[in-house]
Length: 252
Length: 81
Image 1 (tube, rainbow over the protein chains, first blue to last red):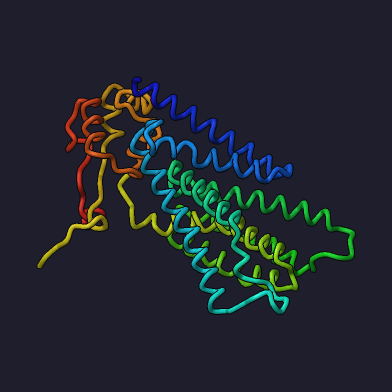
Image 2: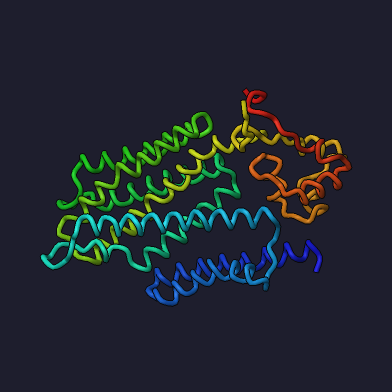
């Protein structure tokens, strides 16, 4: 098989894998969680299992390096999160015996898979696009989606007596605006923006802990952890990449 | 004094874009096809985001009719400053 055919075959397999992941996501949204997770895992791991076992060749060395590095980043993300949860569980000694939430139950298999998949996809895309371009696109997307979500929720809450206070709304818009502001500094101060992104996520942690601590049951706490991962990872991954960008600077 | 040459003190300078243009304005896609890699690989090497293997460096040099040293050269951190 010629190199061109190999590239085409690899691209086709990746395309099918992306369709499987999208289908799995849709399945989860529609309620078929088990099938959804199975499809996502098939799309996520299938092509690389085939490549590692020699059934499908790697497209080229660049693709292989990107995948290897993304895998390492996903391993770091899941490993560090599991370690953090286990350490806090051990130190804090929190149990659900007295009705408090149990930290050990906050890390479910679905959370681990979610963190792994999101980190892996973000890292892979960032490497394909390049750090500066990728980080800028991610943050602009984050800003756009965040702003849209805030406006929709704000309009939905208008006229209701219950809901967030004006201060919380302003805080929400300020956080989204802050991310939008950081986009402007990526080219000039990539490392600084990287640190600020990490700081932004770190500053949000107490907020999530407060939410989780408000007499929430175990399922709600798991939701909070997953929500925090979904909101934090799109900032953390570009943040780490921007910090590392200067160290690996090469001539253009 | 012993100087240790690490990744942080050496940078790879590449002239891939320059020689691609000199080779009759070869596009990234055409160069990718000649060397048997994806266009994304060529873009990444050209932008300095990816350091090619010796094999790919040789293939690129051959495809452009130049030497590997023409395409890639090491520059110390002092030169960059």
